[in-house]
Length: 264
Image (cartoon, rainbow, N blue to C red; front, side, top):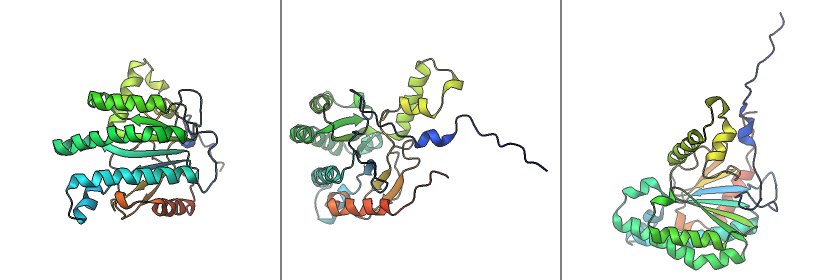
């Protein structure tokens, strides 16, 4: 008996595997010069966990772990650029982090402002473009001003895209995307994966190929939950302030050892 023809969905999932590598002005796509090596991720996202535990292990106040974490960012960013990673996204402050003490939240805002002021010139000289994602309108005015200055100063960077997720939450991002789609007047039948992706904070940037989490935990913690659907996950016991070039190379080697099938 002949089998009936297989009817496939018209909005088949392969659209989720396509990367937008646009580098048009104003678009946050990965630089065209980024090598498309099978064993090298174009986009690496990192959940930087363990600053406070690092401080406690050394008998320090919790807050002292965060400046050490900023130093680790500098090291990892430089090495990622050397390795040819086109896009690096760092989870710096989640909306859930508002539940921490006023002192810690204020310290994190201060660190962000100081890091932007101190690093913008070097980032610009290295061709790194900075982008911030999250509900930035909820941040203090001084913090927003520092962010705007950094974005403007590095807008021409063409060698690497550095995205900082600050006051970010994946579910909040999806809520904001849905609101934007509804506000646009799009009919339910018109909504597909592409239209949702275009409404996200990360629109125009390829999904992460590799998500690294430090500190021993093995969860996404509301980070890029749409974009990470097909990302390779690598977790390490290393606390973020101790994560260095060798640690990044180990994660890249682990990524290169895997075969990505995308459901095929």
